[in-house]
Length: 204
Image 1 (cartoon, one colour):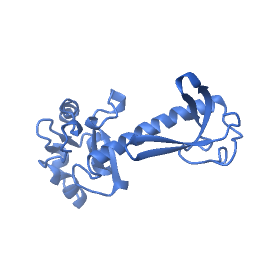
Image 2 (cartoon, rainbow, N blue to C red):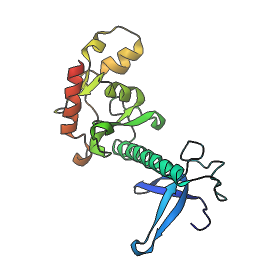
Image 3 (spheres, one colour):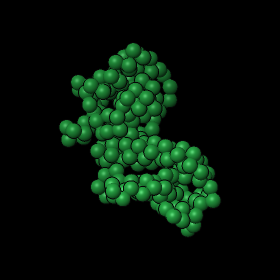
Image 4 (cartoon, one colour):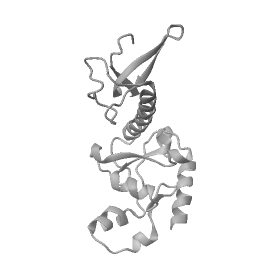
């Protein structure tokens, strides 16, 4: 803290798995609470990697309090998003709940109720989906019945005639059952699914 030396911050998202963010700086000390205050710096506009303004081997020539305050807010948002992805993908055994795709780089944690509507970053509010099914779910092309986890395709999309991606990637999901975790506490929350299902029906 005295020398303004940058550090790496490891944020635990589950046992044995951490997200690393850097550079971060110690900006305050609270001995009575046995804790330090940490702020992030984002000299190049991209959190998560050392920059010319914050190399791991020396002090940062930039990093005003306003810049670090903004970067710290961005860091918290990124940790929130990445942490949510990690716990949801782990619950779904790193596969798409609709098509069973297992390529981790192509998987997302889809919110059932989005952040903007008060959705919480917890497994019952998430579904592991590949990128195409995530986009289709968010845009109400696909919906999931809350009582039986059956996947439904929006009627106008179901009637379309197009190439094999539409036919095999979307239309053939009609009536299939969503793959969900066995643990009751990790399954999609029925009330949140009902929230999404009602909006899917209005879009239909």
